[in-house]
Image (cartoon, rainbow, N blue to C red; front, side):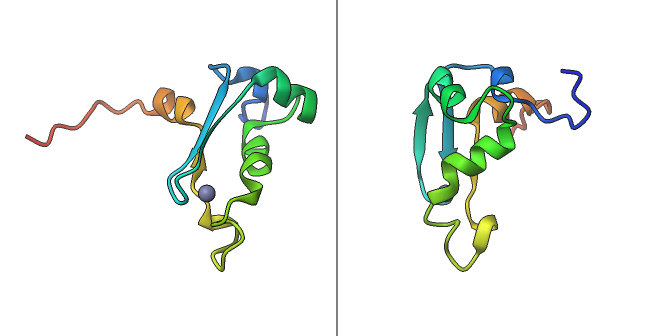
Amino acid sequence: MNRSSGSLTITDHPTDPIEIECKQCGRHGRYRKAALIEKYGSDIVLPDLLALIAGDCEQRTSRLGNRGCGAIYPALARTERRNPPLEFS
Ligand SMILES: [Zn+2]
């Protein structure tokens, strides 16, 4: 990962299939990496890919605009969360 932008590309995604979920609209999908690369190319960065896949999200087209959709890559959300778990007991 030496890219200046720091954005991961599709080939950097840790899982295959690539999972996407949106907490706003409850969408949840799995996409085979090979199929996505064939469609969008192996250079596409993950934020762009997410925008393309989730582009038809109901929330995105609502009055909230692009900010309305909460689509994420759950696999990345897990690995990037470095804080120790909080205890609420
Ligand atoms: Zn959404």
